[in-house]
Length: 283
Image (tube, rainbow, N blue to C red):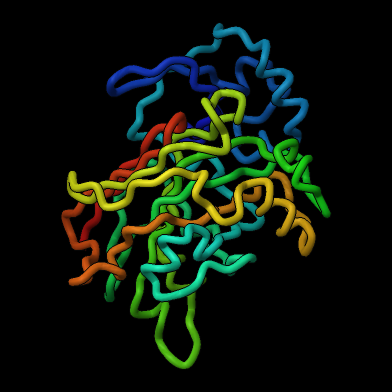
């Protein structure tokens, strides 16, 4: 199942073309049983998943990719994991920790998969990430049960303004990573059963056609179940919460010379089985 936000309405994506996709409008197809609000699907995840398994395509809509918004538009909590790939930790001159650092991106930074983002002053960097979406609430969940609490996965970009992130006397990760548009996600939330191997997916990023990141999610220090178990041992993960699970090596700040996003750049990021997103940047 692929869940998308089309012009603010919840849709199930059923077929893809080169520029358009076909989907089912959930509110119409369910006769109002389920809301058109894309965020609402996660609040009653088990019931929604069961209904969607048998949905008929008699409320089909043509999906215009330019109208796709974030498939999880208003999560209560956004978790972001740092240094969760050893090669990225090494390029950052740090050691990969047994428990990688955790911060937040404020929900107002979220945007859709084909966004135009205004660059703030400073040095804006890219970080492609696998994003996990919580279905049923999770509190003190074991690794063995963690996938039961994942509604699906999507592609994300943890955009970062490095000057304000690292200004003394203490880093400001959350603010520097939460400018408007600094959390592109999409194009859809894909349930794990749709994937070739939910624990081992190719992940990549291109800047203006040049591959700048290329890895596999199996290289994470803490995988998705381990992250859910760790986070839920401290806080309650609520339906529709999202977790940016960390980025592989290849970010601009770690390069010599350093490289950052400039006006006119196009950033394309993809994950095997999940699709790709494209962000364009303006001054």
